[in-house]
Image (tube, rainbow, N blue to C red; front, side, top):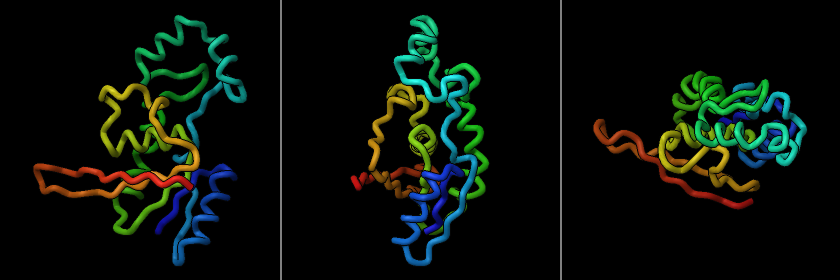
Length: 158
């Protein structure tokens, strides 16, 4: 498979471990897969962020999750725009398996992009159930020109 990682050392290290287990694999790092930038809140706990923002700002973020951003950080929409060239240039053109080693926020946004769940009732991307230590496998199923693509999902706990 072609293995894509973010440029952060922990992602590259995990990608190398995957590459060792997959004969003939290729690995490439891409900054588009870096985690969402939390701006001024980097290194803060959730409690500290809640105290800093206050209940009104938190409510505004809950009501508009696609555009919600922490001070100086990125929104879901910003990350989606950052990911789109990577998706079009690398993921959608692959004919062999692809492994993406990234960070929870980025993986949640990629998941929403492919499954088209960004505008449904599941809630904000940060509430998607993607447990740490889980591999999410998505296999495209093509249903013809009118049916488009559907995805078969399997989760593996490692």
